[in-house]
Image 1 (cartoon, protein in one colour):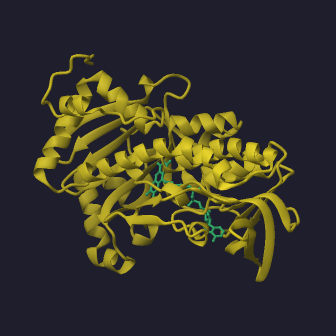
Image 2: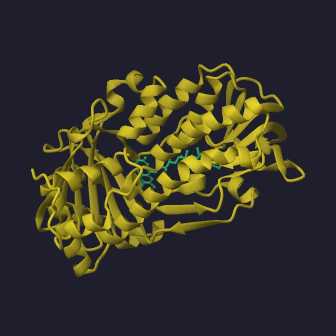
Length: 421
Ligand SMILES: Cc1cc2nc3c(=O)[nH]c(=O)nc-3n(C[C@H](O)[C@H](O)[C@H](O)COP(=O)(O)OP(=O)(O)OC[C@H]3O[C@@H](n4cnc5c(N)ncnc54)[C@H](O)[C@@H]3O)c2cc1C
């Protein structure tokens, strides 16, 4: 860590995916950047994620993707969908996507992110200060001119031409900017954990949908299998009351290949429960400051695009910020180019995430019947399947289905453009 100065070109709060990649991109243009990160240097989380094709391209452009060690990511080609107790519905094959990003990479979030943080260490104009907490904004009139922060028990005032809030769902920067926003917590979150990988998951994932029940199984590096199991929001005490054994029994019943691996899980402490949120902020830019990533637009993890979109923000933001710094104009109206470019794509994904939550998490038999029909149609219909896959892969900006497509998907209209297979 380099010594902290009291003035920088850009100050970023949060060294998550959005903040770290933005810092890296700006520093590579010779811009003087400070990132304040309240956490410790080594992220540690058993959560795994899918690095979608759009995220792979961003890391490739940064020269990070090819430098990832072989045991950092696992290549998954196929995602098989099942109705619990009733069998297979549909399969999505990433091999259908254009090369070279025609695979999903699954990885432990913290180890993947560590590689991004490692890359920041090589940049001479970038300082990442760990254990540093954002405390408030400095202003001149309405213009943001810097932040107040606490580090190792000391208060600091740090000035910057631009302050970026990349500080996640509960963003303190968004609150300090007084940006009107809706933070919605979905009624369900996920119990997450890691098991030894049984046979049958070689480059394939399984996704089970039931009556208000979801179990996802993703192969991850080191011969392990990551699971996520949908549960209503719960405190640790109520999870204990449900009984870990009951959850394990339910998982074994859904996929009997888990019987042996689940024996390793003897205590709830080997898992974590993660709630899910959506954030809608009225604006992402103001005079001298902006917000990116989950701080601006967290979305339901069904769409598996939250981290990818934080990275996309960083790419667009770095371009806009370079222009603004060159003109000496970091006013809200100059920074608005960022929001204009990013908001439509992000809002489309948020809507898609909400639709999937409504349909897939449902306990209603009519809704479940419709879901099964749609997934079975997608299994046969190459055109509609490709549209759905490219949305999840982050490769399309428009909603995957028009009204006609939806009617086709539920079997109410024939598909005149269909290719089957
Ligand atoms: C169960 C689950 C599964 C998911 N799966 C996927 C997936 O498969 N693919 C995908 O793309 N996305 C996935 N996501 C979403 C993804 O994790 C987030 O969208 C992504 O991490 C957002 O990145 P970010 O940089 O905006 O925020 P964050 O990653 O939250 O980073 C914010 C950073 O700011 C720091 N910070 C916060 N407050 C302060 C402060 N006051 N001072 C200093 N620092 C501060 C935090 O310590 C943190 O490091 C999933 C989310 C969940 C809950």
